[in-house]
Length: 429
Image 1: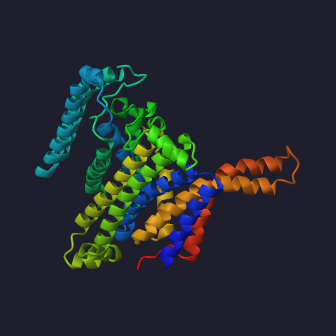
Image 2: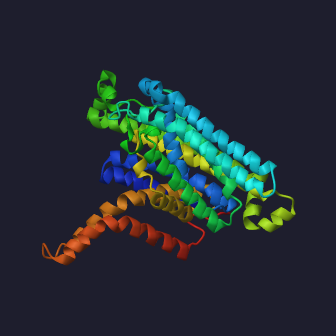
């Protein structure tokens, strides 16, 4: 009953936005709320179920966005001809040198092990850069105003969503093999640093996804508004509902996105609930609550942590692919690890850590507040300063402070929930 009431309140807030502002705004909040709920599910799987403090959420979300470009965008033939195969060869040589170094480290011992490993890595780096650098320069110089990158595979964009999850899962496995042996605070530092590295690569390697030049015009799984407006049948239906065709087409596209996102969220929520109530879920909670006792019972704690870390990261990668598809462009500059990772963690903590429904609730509620707090603050400050003289320093200062209302409100909500209900709005049962 409590969950139903809280979800009904959030639904009323979104519907109220439609009546008081516009239905476009309400549907946009709904769609991003669905994406945020998927991200919160991934973080809740790692933290709420296993106690893993991952502060690199945005890195995995960015990998999901990259997957949309690599899967759905058409290839650039001129770039491939200029140096595409050579870039692939350079990457293979780099990966081979890393594998060789790992094998040498694991199969040798004594004083020579470190020197041999360092020598293999150094030689591999030199050879890799000798092959890679000229090819990258050639590719990035191919019509850099509109391309300058290799492009993708030209496949349907919906395929990019599971691929984004697989890409994030693969990187999470590599990270987990090296970082999950660390204590929780060191794991947080490591994941944050790795997220910054991932985003730095996206920003600087133009051959991969144009860097900060951004990739625009990504394919969509729903019709374009202009195509709907040119369809006589759609225009006739819009007229029957007393809607302008332009407005009707925008609402229709957002509704289709909402249905797709809702299907993904429901599937992931059902799977998360089944995992939570399974013997595997009970084992993960036992490991979370007392690692020493779990080890004494014969459980491989590090392997189970790696499992859940990969699964949670994969869900974040799917959410990143969904968000990039909704935006229609990949903009690496918008992935800010500290800012948006903080927001996702607020969603999980406020909703209820360890409760999948709580994570979904937190995703909707916190995103609604993140969007609406600034216009609400503008209205409040306008009313507060209505009696003040125009041009006064206090009135100017109060009106200029509205832009900081978002972070202030998120912090206040987090403190309030932690003080009054430390386990969140929907606590773990």
